[in-house]
Image (cartoon, rainbow, N blue to C red; front, top):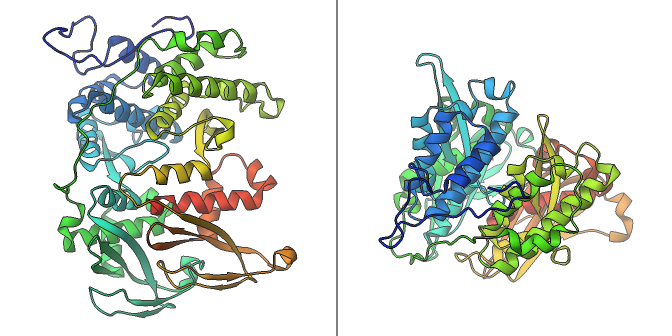
Length: 497
């Protein structure tokens, strides 16, 4: 790899009789060139056992380029999780301290689930726990509850799936396993305000229109969660973990739900990488005057460029990213939060995700913005997908009907609001000329139409929890309503697919 601002050409070597793999060109453990392996080592500074376990896991994926992409996303997530913990790499629960065996097992599960740590469409979470008895740290990777649902949709096994919790203050009447229960409650109420948790149910709609309802009692939920190793995650995202437990229990009733659909025609075409990428942006470099870390930023950008399908998009998006980083870093308002100071791997991660999801940084498209966020003293470049980008993602999904309508609402306490469940648009009326009389925000909802109507509700409790995770409060304070709308959309967009 040249020090000349990322002038290098990493690519996957494909062995063939005409072009055999040379020991001095590729790493013995995977299909990566040594230049890429060395670059990864510079970026992540992971322990040797962890890093070698990642390299040895390439064979789990049939497509070597997809393997490189998924393992790179995983390394980014593991690095971020390690930085986040008290003591960082010195914390025994840090993912970077996991045994090589557990890393391989976790990555094998990631491939088997069709999962990803792609920051734009994350389906998984990781958990590393230190075991005192064996004196080892072990890593596990699991699908989130939305990831479980999305997996079934991707395999064309279901049309839709929803999960609801039942509390003592709700109106609830069970019918049977083929009919949706009668269930009345405010979709915006805090879970604690709805009384004691009695249980929950998952409603699965199969492609032939048949329903299956799985009810799980609160005692079962509690027992399952008590056995979980993810207690820290449960304490923060209790409702989401309860829903995940209900979906897992539904698996035992609908065994086919989470199996691979053999009737799905999968595209055998393998991904390809671009080579010799730097010359395409070399003319632009004459005008790029980044005061700090220019070499590291351009190297990260060049590495990400190799994942784009065509060279024109590759060049345009690379220049757009570098331009955004330069402008933001020059602005005095971002002192200490300059994107030029961000972890280089976070820039590469975001750009690779753009390439994979076919989204754009071009200002006129308004699909993605790059936001600096601090993670325990380490600055990251976060590629935030905006409303238009989320809609583009949903419209490009090959496993969902085309979306013809999306409607986003913020609901205030004095509005007239009546909900009718997930599959019918609610009644929401208010006088826009009397905004000050609407009171406080209590939640919001998104209604979409993709051949059938789906409404997704987001409570104020969830909005606040997401807001509290944000490192910067500037957008929340200056554009409160827009920030709430974005949060509502972000929390619901998995349901668009």
